[in-house]
Image 1: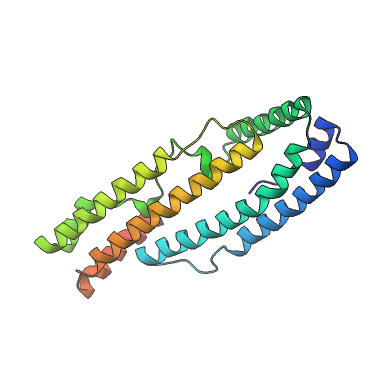
Image 2: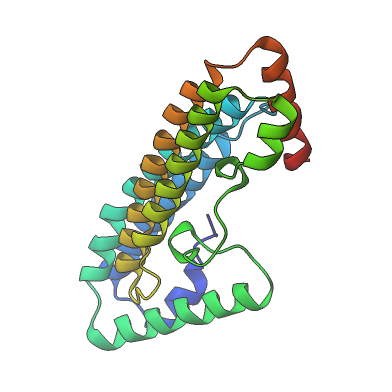
Length: 216
């Protein structure tokens, strides 16, 4: 979560006293949300596919809480702006987005519509089948996992809103994107659990070795 450029916003819109107070409230909520996200960072790496998906689910949930916490003060601040101030603020936000993109910075989840799906949602089916020597039942479970992954990717792509202009609209897009990611990860987690249940201990070890190789 980027730092809210309070000084730049003040310079751009020349706020009234009421707007300044609302901006201060927004800045406080923004800082609290960023701290919430940082505090949710795992202290230890997850070494299993199920563990990595669980971490993703937990992180997405925290990010949704953070975004929801910022939304009321952002809407309150925005509602106090005149049309010209709103246009200046939108222009400032667009300039910062372009600057981050030029510097190679990762964009918010709502702007990642063209990005590849997270590695935790990608499965090298051919390698898994070869190394684990799957039987027919296991192949069917792996196919179900592949299908769940395909549906998950479709969910994340279809829910993208990359053209949001105003800050409240962008935050709404982030909320929608995170909700889609949460649904996608849940879908894949359920299919993964079904596939995992069919594996022997030796096959599970081989499966996790593939996953660790791909995430290092």
